[in-house]
Length: 73
Image (cartoon, rainbow, N blue to C red):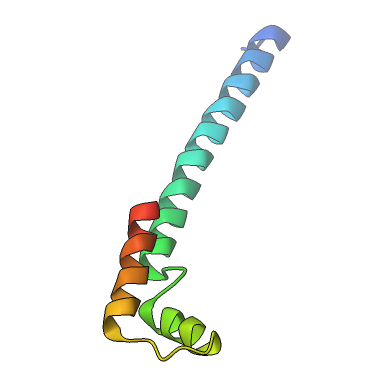
């Protein structure tokens, strides 16, 4: 039982397309999960940034910056 060259090429192309689609969704899922566990900016970083700018950050300012960043998503 031999597979024809044409059938082999069709199977190969279909397998490559299925692998690319599956890889895209798997990598998207893993990246989203990573960002949830390790957010790019947290309150500690915002406080450090405001302190470096020469300001004494109040809790209200920190919350305001975090809220504005959440709304920008």
